[in-house]
Amino acid sequence: MAHDHKLEIFRGLLKFKSNTQKIWGVLIFLTFVTIIEVALGIIKPESLTHSSFLGMKILNWIFIILTLVKAYYISWDFMHLRDEKTSLRRAIVWTPVFLVAYLAFITLVEADYIYGVFKNGFVTWNF
Image (cartoon, rainbow, N blue to C red; front, side, top):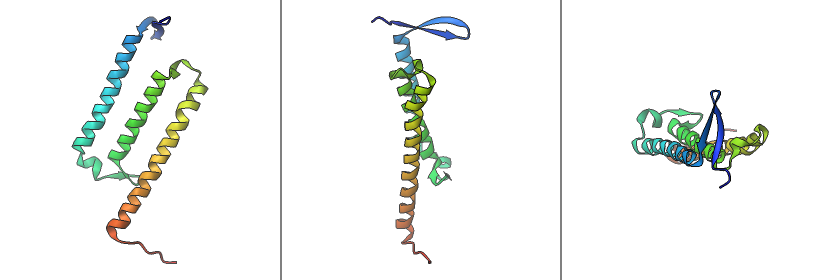
């Protein structure tokens, strides 16, 4: 490959980082975040499942945030967005992040409402 090493500036020092090191770093980071997600899904701490924020359980918020972090990091590293201009990075990354977060929020709030209606009976409106 023509670009075996990437020159990085780290605290004023020049440092070469090979592609192998970058791949291992990505693997370790994504594995760490996935282990946190799986552990929280198995353990389901009571403090996170019995408290809610903006209509959703805090555990759901944590899963959404960790999933968005992984998606951002994958696009940052594998789509080589770190080397692009800031405006292009923002256009590519932040737009889907906000849209996915909004879609997840709407879906979970509506699902919680429907669950409440079926659990507590039908809701009638006083006009």
